[in-house]
Length: 189
Image 1: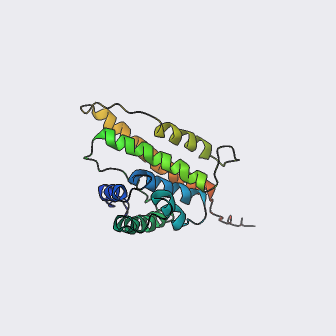
Image 2: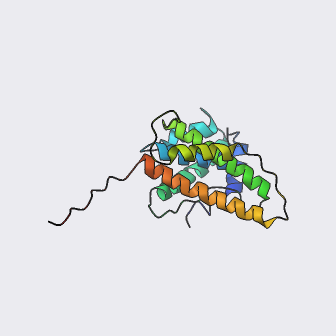
Image 3: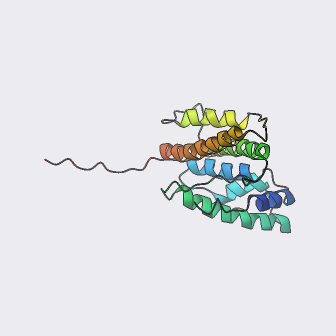
């Protein structure tokens, strides 16, 4: 679908741990998508600071991590704005245990909500359309504990449906917070 789907989740997760980052790969991507949905223009320096912490850019591990994060930033911003619904959530691969993928999805949603807040979107504010409901749903996903039966295929299907719901909700949230100003066609006389 896009560059995010081929981005190395495990590699970024390892780099973030080595750099002693404040959050993991899924939460970092959710944070970026949240900031991008809330603000017209995303400040990469702000995003990096939220992930790595202030001044954490001198070590070789932090510099390697920054390079990976910059690639993720460029790919994500491109796909969020392309209008082709090409965004994929940065989550563990399908062969990872479902419990790990579910936990990462919760972290992704937590990052998204934090990103919205950093961008100035508040639950207390006057929010358009479906944004309040999306925020409540993401909060629930981020705080849900998941128990999984590895032999139950319906849980895998449910997980995939939730991932798709989150993905489409991000695109809807972004569109509602930043509607395109399309001029209505003139009516024939």
